[in-house]
Image (tube, rainbow, N blue to C red; front, side, top):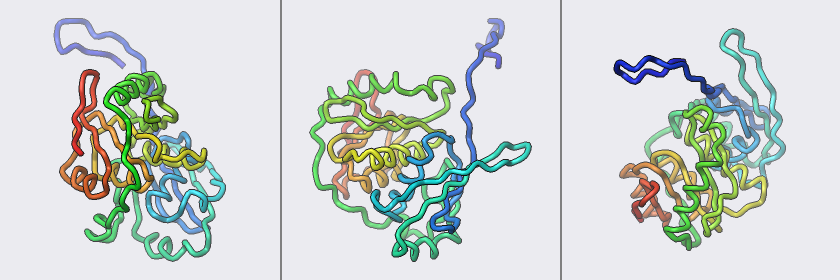
Length: 255
């Protein structure tokens, strides 16, 4: 690639990586449920977090995730992720499978209606004790924990941090929703309780991120960009603390 300075300065060759975006088909008990466009890393975590965020399973109910690569000709391939859930979970899956199609830009593709999109959120059981200083420490530490983002400049990161600001787990993806699903899945698979820390996202604060954070049981969400009005209202209703426009020198406490 060539970098141009929009002026008389000669263009210069510059090399950097381009992130992979590929379809990931999720099958539960042999039933095709969703196809998501995602970065094909940490897919076991992604599938686990996705199923939890959809309300289809608790962490302990998600069995082993079997991954299968599928060739796709000139456009490259994809992945099929197969997982078995308890039989009592199949009712909602069968009902919604026909209507569910996803991608990396939308967190609610295929939802049946407004009521389903705005279904009530559970109330969080505790408040975060993280200080502004701890959040600043986490933001600084996270910059060094994004290898994919450093190479591509095109991915989002989701990080789980202890209340002292120490970064524990980081996941990356081309989609911010996918990155958060990967993080929640990683915490579940490691047996880490989201309630004892906070989540940092390198993205704007959309209401889908609020919903995923609340359903994971985490009491504080920090984002580097601004929130939407619905994200703020949903955060307040669920008791989620929200810190936004979190930069080097300051941030905004919304609720």
